[in-house]
Image (tube, rainbow, N blue to C red; front, side, top):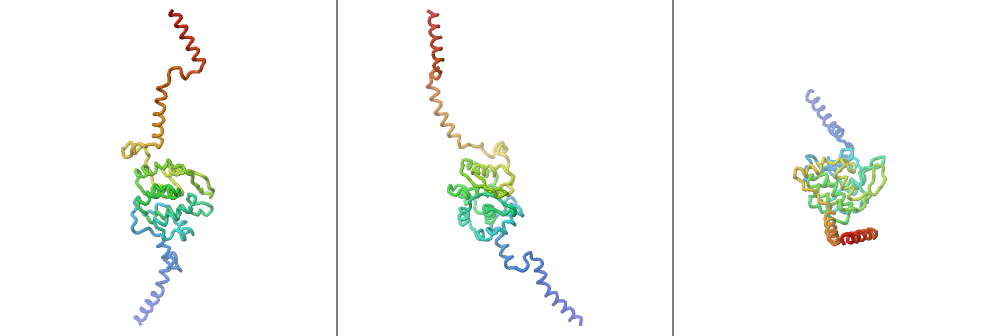
Length: 266
């Protein structure tokens, strides 16, 4: 009788075990869907840590969850590679973070998280930044480079983009679109703490890096033009005779003074 009672207890506990497991699963009722979503949102197993953490964790958890639940992420970002991401970047027409009452994530922000997930090679990111045709792909690559690379490399790579004055459309928190420029967006990446609802890692000031000799002084793209202008002005200044640029009244006064001085000497 004792053994039969024990076997009955074991059978009842075995029947309750699947239900207990289902209660622990956050997606109870749809285990295959739960598994598929987790796989789609998982960071690449070959990816390295960035700033000592999972690359996707550089985006706040609340923002990540909004991106994971967005229809654009589920439909168009699944299975993206470094090559197919270029096609998606060519389709976006503004930069931004979350917007509207429901704080929906912009496509730009979804692709940014996708880059953190697949972690493209640095050479690929540099190609995103250097190519001149797709300005939003350049902005996407610059934002990824800012959050994932060393501060010295960030300055040396992003500062030349100050010479890019192309217009970008920016969507703010209220959902309104406005016009900014590429150099303005780069300045945000180098100076602001939060860009497109993403908290940027701390970046030492450029003056500090120059004092420690880790970073050479910045060379402006206008320095060559200024040097050429100085070279053109120097011969002109040397060839001008005294009084040549004076008005007629001043010239007549100078001639009268010289003639009076000559008469007095005589």
